[in-house]
Length: 188
Image: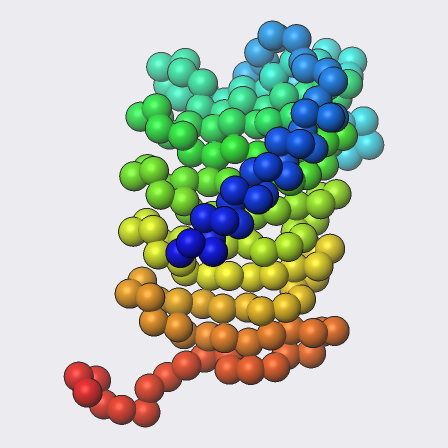
């Protein structure tokens, strides 16, 4: 587990250094609900509000009007740190965007505070080591990507930590064991 903690620390330092250099603009404190029909996302122009490029936060709320998700948008494009919460108030997700693209760390947590997943994006595609966890905190899946394509070690574990699958993908070729199944009867 200490390798995973070191990875988080290194990625955190990298992201903080990168975010501090590029975070020159923040959107105005204008909150527009995602159900507002004047707010639209288009493929070519990004987010538009009343037919103009949107500057502010697109928010999603629960029935009591409490904000559950807040997405920063500048000049019609996602920009900065988007945050989400469970309706009970616990942190649900943190996602980074740059110029309308997923960039950097995407994190999500289970309601108990344990990580659900930890993804890294570069220019809107998965890039690097991606981790998925069970609610009990055990690692469920490790996938490695190179600019959107699976590349490198790929592993899956069951909820008790038993390795189920361990293989490598290199240049679109698969090497290793896709699924581990014991030949011993259950209970041995």
